[in-house]
Amino acid sequence: MEKQDWEGKELDKDLLFPGNKIYSSETCVFVDGATNSFLTNTSSRKKDGLPRGVLTRNGRYTARCSVDGVQIHLGIYDSPEEAHLAWVSKKIEQAKIIAAKQSDQKVAKAIIQRFENYAA
Image (cartoon, rainbow, N blue to C red):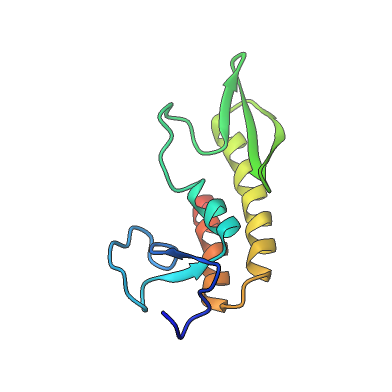
């Protein structure tokens, strides 16, 4: 741990390997709290059955996402898939901004891949 950039950071066990349960220097990385929150906000399943970032309102689908702790309205769509794609697009945009601030390139790459995988 002491050989890594860890001070003031949080341990993330599944950024590099989604679903990872093993804590080791090969499988875990340290990230700042804001980055960890950005990643954690998308890892759990929604209980309402809708894709991440999607809400229903009056029979239509609203896309929104949190950017720096502020909810941003991304638009109203006819299908949950369209709304989710708007959310994915915004998350990829934010992931690239966050990735550019990382000192560890494997962390930067993993952050972007996390959200590009949502689009696949």
